[in-house]
Every structure is written in C-alpha cells, then in structure tokens.
Image 1 (spheres, helix red, strand yellow):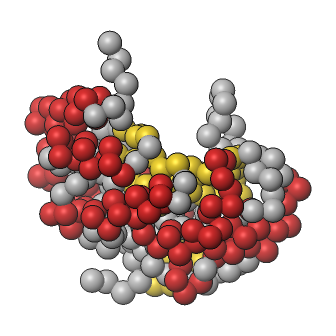
Image 2: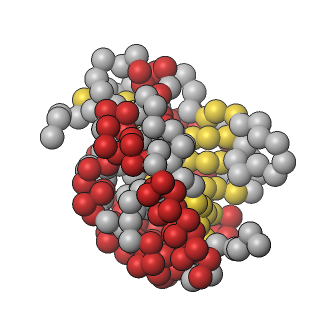
Amino acid sequence: MPVLHIEETNARSVLVPQNPPGEPVSEYTLNPYSGCGLGCAYCYVMKFPFAREHPQAWGEWVRPKMNAPFLLGKARTKIYGRKIFMGSATDPYQYIERKYRLSRRCLKVLVDCNLKGLTVHTRSHLILDDLDLLTQFGSRLRVGFSVPTNDDRVRKRTEPKAPKIGVRLNAMKRLRQAGIYVTASLAPVLYCQPREFAEQIADAADGVYFGAMDYTDRTGIAAMPNARRYFNGPAYRELVAELKAALIEVGMLKSEA
Ligand code: SF4
C-alpha cells in the first residue's frame, strides 16, 4: 500500500457556510482534515480542484488542520445555535485521528455551542473513541455511517483502506445502544447481496440515505473499466431496484406508491 503523506497545516478557515434552500441539514460544514487517507475509489471529493492539483493521488495525502479547534473556538458566536455537518470532504475518523485528535478537539468546542443540530459523517469505528462527547449532544446528533455494500470483496476493491463492513455494522450498533441516531448511508450503492444487506441495515441503523452511483467520471472508478461498465449497465439498475425493494420490505425506506 502507498505511503500516506501527512502535511500538517494551519488552515485559514475551518467552516464553510452552506445556503441550501428549505430546511437545511447543515448551515456550516466542518472538516478537521483536508484530503483523506481512506481514498475510496468513487470519492467525489477527488474531483475538486484542490485534490486534482495535489501532486499525490487521492487517498495518499492528508493535511491535518492543526489550528482547526482554535479556529472553531474563535467562531463560537457565529455557530451558536446553528446546524453543523462534520465530514463533508474528509473522514473525521480516518486512522490518523488517533494521532491528532482534531475531530475530538473540535467536538469539545462544539458541545459548548448549543447547536441546533450536528451531523457527523464517517465510515470508521474510531468514532467510538468519542462516545463520551457525542452522547452529550443528545437528540441533536445524527451519525451518518457510510456502508455502500455488505460484501467485503467489493470493499477491498473500492475502499481497501476503510474498515471492514462487519466492523462498521458493529460500530453502528454500539452508537445506537448509546442512544445516538444512526443513518446508514448507502450512497453510492455498490454490488451487494440485497436481501441480506437490507436486514443487516435494519439491525444496525435508524434510517437510511440511499443513492445510486451517478458519477463515474474523474473518480477512481473511471480507471476501472469493468466497474464503470457495470455501473452504467442494466445489471446495476436491477440491483439498485432490488435493494430498494428489500429496504422497503424491512421498513427502512418508504414505498413511493
Ligand atoms: S472516506 Fe469519504 S472523504 Fe474519504 S475518500 Fe472515502 S468517500 Fe472520500
């Protein structure tokens, strides 16, 4: 596996304001790291200019924003009572979090900000390290756990550096046992065993975010011709439909009819 280049940096800002219409999931995104050591093949972040312009390939570099907790502390009044989404362009619980603890230190700032809502998005069980802080947000917290497949052979091809599926499902269950609302993010759906997968999700999550693969250009998938053909073909569309039906059957999605 390639070496991970770690470039400690001081960021100019750590919050990005969002202006979506309607009731927004977040008013600010927060990313304690730039880049991501997990390097999923389909990651949409690798299409952004800052990622394309980096000399190392996506997944081989990460910049810990060393001053992220400090900047967040300075922005306390701005984010007081607001909604924050943590982990929109990086995984806040990638493995180097064990070294830097930037996500943890950001959470320590956020617990005093009387947030209206906090969403933390990850695919890593290291989030359990911060259970003591996460539980302090009560019902204002949502954890979005990315689980695009239940098949570890697929995970090995598309996100080999990310935790195994069973490890993720167990982490989701632990979060729920601690009273935290967990959404399973099945987006983009990858090859899986639909019925079994739907049951596993029903056992591990409170809700589901579901989405088919709709971007194979300029991601690692573009360099995997067989995978690209698969995602653009009828077998994939059938799989997505079958998974959706199975999720409806187990009560995790509502029927559109
Ligand atoms: S964990 Fe998230 S941010 Fe990191 S490479 Fe995978 S999809 Fe991208």
